[in-house]
Image 1 (tube, rainbow, N blue to C red):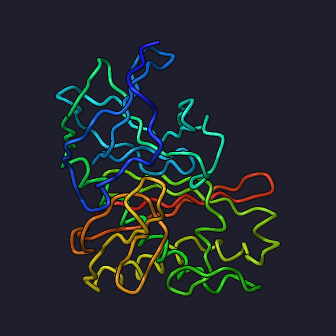
Image 2 (cartoon, rainbow, N blue to C red):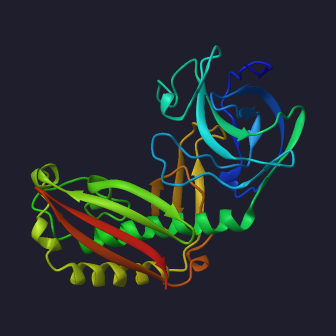
Image 3 (cartoon, helix red, strand yellow):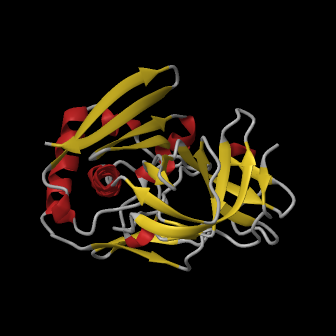
Length: 280
């Protein structure tokens, strides 16, 4: 197995929350993966990786030392072994563990290297992620009257349908696709499923609220507890603050006009609702 240097004892310093698309980094460790490609760990990086626990936003595109980064994934090490993605056996913040960005490349690199992120692709994903958060707030608002019990609320104070019903979320360039499941568990929590019988009315209400949010011209920023990969980060937009480890635009004005489309599918014992958010 190709192996270079020692596994790090501290988290990778990540600069993408600040909007960085370029970094000069030191190679700390390199080892071969089972498929023959190389996992490269750096002291710091501007490259956004896909998270193993909630892979909604995919990895950036770009280069490391002039060669393409094939993929980037969150990894973790106890100092003896590197675990990648779903093989990580502990949660972030576990004492004695370092969480790292695993840059996957085809050929070895060493020393001081340059990380360059595809700026256009980053901006498109950042727009998609901010749009996703605004759309979730808009959908929660549209369904605020569909609850018979008190449940957790979102950053705007609406019952958090998005958090309680979400199955998967996928950030796309300039948009997103969110899949929700309304089954027995959600009904027990108090969701009145007949609220979705008039899908067009819910979609219209969500789009109206989304337009109001866009009309605020609010600034968007990332607040974080620290600069390490495992440190908590938050999306802040006006008065709203949502835990999030992704990248975002700097203002809702960067999004232009957005539209929500809802699709409902009746399943055995449940309803699936798909929300697609995209530019108009």
